[in-house]
Each structure stands twice: as C-alpha cells, then as structure tokens.
Length: 120
Image (cartoon, rainbow, N blue to C red; front, top):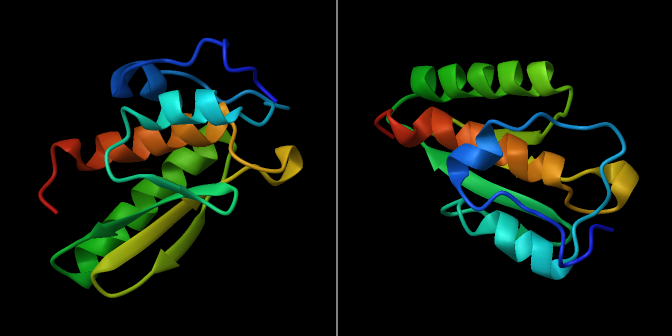
C-alpha cells in the first residue's frame, strides 16, 4: 500500500501524463483521496473507482468506448466497461493489488481528458 505521505500528482494533467507501472501498490485512503481530487465525478466504492459518462447517441458512446480501449491498450491496464445506448460506466481497480492503485487514477485521468473538450 502506498503510504499517506507518498507523492500523488495534484492535477488532472499531472495524473494524465503519467505511465502505468507494473506491480503498483494499493493506495492508502489518504493517497486515494488526493488522487481522486482532480477527477470530477469519479467515486470510490467497494475497492474500485467508477464514473458514468453520458452521450447523445449510440455512435458517440461507441466512439468513447473505442477511445477508452485505446488508452487501456497503451497503458496495458484495462477497465471494466458497462456499455449502454447513451452511456458508458467505466470502472477501474487493480485486482493484483486488491484495490485502487495510482495506475487506476492515471487511466481515469486520461479518460477524463477525452471528454474535457468533447460535448457529452
């Protein structure tokens, strides 16, 4: 587990420019709260972080899903996705670490950046 005193990037952009690291440890409660601070709408529940993204059409939802898949491929860190007609639920956790790691927050920040300039 990463101790509360560990460095966690304090901005969305600082998180989003990081790369996932193999064997990342689970974040402490304090470190997790700091990592979630720049991630609007992301919530921690039952050992994972999750956010629902809403779209105007199925086509927009599928474009988003494909962009998330590309992020997951590039980071070699994969979310659980709940894909619906006009929404997608993105859930990150690291099973090997038994909860949320910095890798999950890095990927959430990269997903967040996808929608920062797009209409949703």
